[in-house]
Amino acid sequence: MPGAALASSPHAREIALSTTLVIVGLPSSGKTTVFNALTLAEAETGTFGGDAEGEPNLATVKVPDPRLDLLTEMFQPQRTVQADVQYFDVAGIAKGIAEKGMSGQLLGVLSQADALVHIVRAFADENVPHTDDTVDPLRDIETLNLEFLFSDLALIDKRLTRLAAQIPKTRGADREAFEREQIVLTRLKETAENDTPLREVVGDLDPDDAKILRGFGFLTAKPLLVLLNLGEDQLGEIGDGLIATARERFARPGVGIDALAGQIEMEIGRLDEGDATVFMADLGISESARARVIRLSFELLGLIPFFTVGPDECRAWTINRGATALEAAAEIHSDIQRGFIRAEVVGYDDMITAGTMAETKKAGTFRREGKTYIVQDGDIINFLFNV
Image (cartoon, rainbow, N blue to C red; front, top):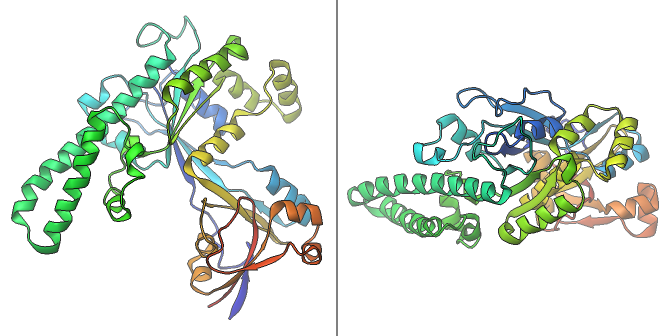
C-alpha cells in the first residue's frame, strides 16, 4: 500500500549507521584529552588512549545542527533524533610502529574508519615529555603520515606477493581479475614509494578498479583531519600562525587542518551552558570544538544532512553529497527505495521563511521531485512509496 516515509514510519530505521572517526596521534599528543572534549567522556588520560593490547576508547556523539533545533521548535514533535558520529580513541602510534607491524586490533580499527583525526601536539608542558624530546608539530605530522604510508605499502607488497603466486595457477575470468588487481596495486605501490598518500590517486581510478580496493582499508586513502593541540598561551595569533604554516605544507585534497586547545575544550565540556559561554568568551573562543570538528570531518567526507519532520518526529539523516532522492530514500529503509513514487521537497531556508508546510505550498517552494533529484544540504523531504 502507498505510504509517506516520515521518521515515525514503522519502516524507518530505528538506529542509523554512525559515521566513524578514529582519533590517532603520537604518544603524549593529548589525543585522549581531545577525545574527552569531543565526546564529553571521562576516559583516563596519560595512558595514550589505552595500551596497545587493550580496547580503544569509544563514544557515540549526537551531531549538533542548529537547523534541526529550529525545526524541532517549529514542529514540536514527540521526539528529535540527531545524526550520530562515533569516535574511537586508539593507542598512541609510536614512531617506527609500521616497520615492526601494527597489531591486528589497531590496524583493524584504523582500516574501518570513515576518516582519521590526527591530534598533533603543539603545546609545551614540562610535566609531559615529548617522545622526541622537543615539540615540533610539522615534524610530528610528517612522522605519522609516513607511518601510515609504510603500513599501506606493507599491505600492498603482501598482496602483490600472493598475486604473483596465484596468477600462474589461475585461468579464465579469475586470472583476468587477478591481473587487473595486480596492475592497480602496482600503481598504488609506485605512489606510496614516492611518499604520496593514496587518496591523491584513488579518486582518479576507474570505478571498477576502485571496487578492487574496498576491502583493503588503506590508511592514506582515507580523509584526514589534522588538529593541532594548542596550549592556552597559543590561542590567537600564535595558533593562527601554526595553522597557516601547517596548511601551507600539508593541505592537500582530502586533508583538512585546524586547531583546538584540547585541555580547555575538555574543561568547557564539563561546565553548564551558561558558564561555558562565559568561559569561552573570556578566552576568545567563538565556537566549541565539538561542533567544528564534526563539521570539518563531514566536509572532508563529502557528507550532508537532510531532514524528515512531523508531529511524531524530526530527524536528521546523513548522505553523501551528490546523492539522489532514491539513494536518500534507501538511507531510511530499503522498502522506501524499492517502492519509491516521489519525494516532496522543501529547502530548509524556504521552510523557515514560510513557517509552515502549507505556506511553502502557497509560496511555490514546495516541490515534487523524482528518483534522480540531487538532494541538497538541509532539504526537508517526505518520501511517498508503494510496497
